Amino acid sequence: MGNPRAFLTIPRKEAGYRPLSDRIHDFSEVEQTLNSRDRMEQASRCMDCGVPFCHWSCPLGNRCPEWNDALYRGKWELAFKLLTSTNPFPEFTGRVCPALCEKSCVLYLTDKEPTTNRENEAAIMERAWLEGFITPQPPRQRTGRRVAVIGSGPAGLAAAWNLNRQGHSVTVFEKDEWPGGLLRYGIPNFKLNKKVIDRRIALMEAEGIEFRCNTAIDLSALAADKANEPLPAELQGFDEYYIATGTPQARDLNVPGRELPGIHLALELLSQQNRELGGIETPKDKRISARGKNVLVIGGGDTGSDCIGTVRRHGCKNVTQIEIMPQPPVGENPATPWPSWPVVMKTTSSHEEGCERRWLLNTNRFLADKDGKLCGAEVEEIEWVTPPEGGRPQMRPTGKKEVIECELVLLALGFLKPQHPEYRKGVKVIGDAANGASLVVRAIASGRDATK
Image (cartoon, rainbow, N blue to C red; front, top):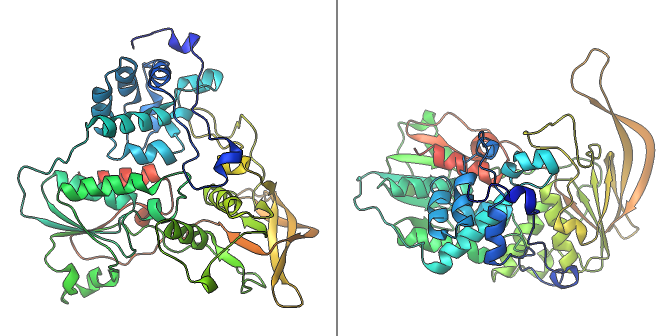
């Protein structure tokens, strides 16, 4: 801790977002960066607490006080080594992690101005790439064991990275055109530029990891009840298998009118947009466009926010986001006290770009005009009531109904936890495929930990 009074004298300073009038016209990353001097000054605010709750709250166990101190002292390479000792992909988490570490920071408890850990780690990694600290490090000796990783999202990449470092020969199977999974197809470019993924994949290939894209794997072939049957040709010859296929099944909304054209699952829009930015054109009759339309986003989480930012860049007329749960409290929530993650009102860069947000609304049905085209959604105010005998609150309609005008609806209702059969010996399920939809940082931790 080089400056023991920095947290008292230096206020928190974030890089902030690009000007709204500029960023809504492209899909470049919205977040800006601080200069090196300001970044080092921000790192000096870390107090190196006796009990580092940031370390406790991070699924990867990142040692924030150590690499913040190195950064403050200008020892960028040391900061990089300390950061990557626990986190294989800080360039991802430095962009898309909600920063659980910051919400458990003692400075968050005292004045709501925690150390800028997330931005710091992103800056450290960009400096590492720029200065050449990051070079291919293939294992000096191979073990002779071959491992298949099925799925190239954050969990699969972390597993492949760790297994390769151990000397195993790793092949990653990916059903889509490029590696990256959720990082590639689920997160908009304005949050995570895909060149960041390409750079990492190129490094992993240089270290000896093989990626086989456009290769769908039938997981049922790995089931225990087929242990006596020969595996498909593409799965033969491996000693272990890691299933990292994420949560492919989105939660849908089974209400009248769901079949109308113009109602889509959120990932249909997000993945299509990312493919188009990657150079893959969508047939005109299948293209989802929000230009000039009233858009309704159903679901109040991060995926819904990503949809808002995307349709804004399409040039939508307006966008409304509705949520079935109550509006979270602003600032403080006694139900989620420090150092746990605070369930409080969150405003993203996409919300700032223009969106009406409403809570405690349930969707009853979708409406069509005389030509059979989607024109609105009937919603109803609801209440959450705890039964007299206790237990989970139950939803109760109030009878207050209205119609929200819309020509495009995006369903961002989360994902269903996959159901897996019992697999044969040597097969492990990791990441969201094992635990259900969660954070990128938790998926990375799962992939890393399963391969130790």
